[in-house]
Image (tube, rainbow, N blue to C red; front, side, top):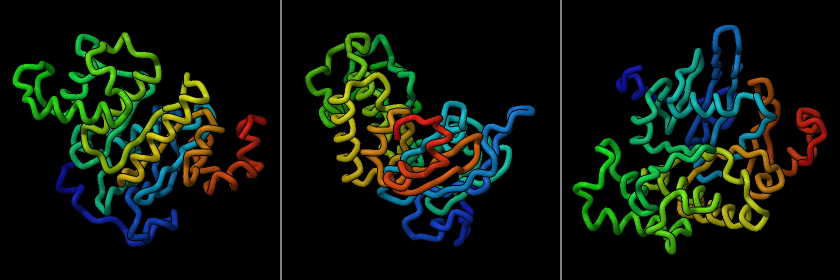
Length: 265
């Protein structure tokens, strides 16, 4: 799709019900993604309001990552529409969506192993440039340092990625995403491999970012940690919407409990 097509405005009403709200930042309407004969996402509709932290929940293979990939421009949907701040962004590539304010973290961290922490963040502040330190200005390094301090890496600026613990790598991934100055951040498995204390610290960090105006969609299999963090949950199964509601409503939903085969919610 061309950028010109993306300038069209979204509908005032959607099957999700919240799309007509002035606070709707993201609207996914009838999203379907097929890979050959496999339907990974099946006519999925939901919306995200500004300032929310929304949990995107589902068993393994439910279609969560594929939905993320369609929203962030990694995969073009087979059908359906994605609106961001009222504009149709369906099929726009990932690097163009980053410029529009949509960023994503990955469960498999992707730092530059030959650059230290602050250099990794500094390079993330310079999208589209060659991955070298040539020409980095003092103000860029200052901004990168401030971002590192913001995510709790202020005492690890000179360390290499392979010197960081798992929680430190997660903080580095968040800093690199925040370097793109997003309005909407999709976060993949922020609690994986963390202790209970580390989960709480990362939750506190994400809540601080929400207080600064960042809207977030979070995928994680740590249901206790996720349901303690989020404002609302969207649950999918077999690529389709199963339920949505507050953490309390999701905990008590029998269909959700069955989908998780009795797992603790």
